[in-house]
Image (cartoon, rainbow, N blue to C red; front, side):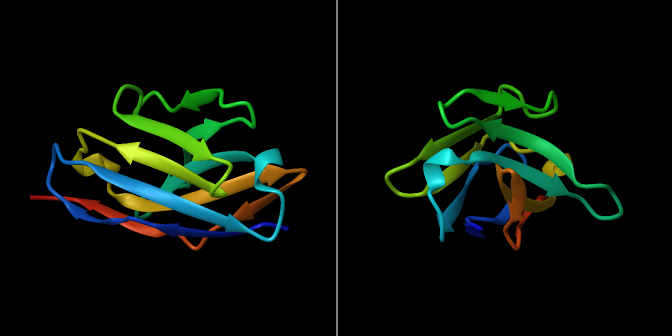
Length: 114
């Protein structure tokens, strides 16, 4: 099973940008479908963006045009570039890896506030 460690969260003003990273270890990274999810206080965890082994991407409607997911198989890392951030993007962001089973990181807090 793959181990995942997220980084890059923090406090940012509305309209700002952040880039999240998720470093994977313990398995062959390139075979995994990778995704980012988020969970706001008192809300269910929701899908944000995903990327296939071949680089095909998909996004939640709420982040389309603002967020970009990418992966670097040579570094065993998946990224989430977040632009034009809004207060409603505030949440704990989780990295997910899927190959037969799901693996999750510990999460990184993103707070968008003035």
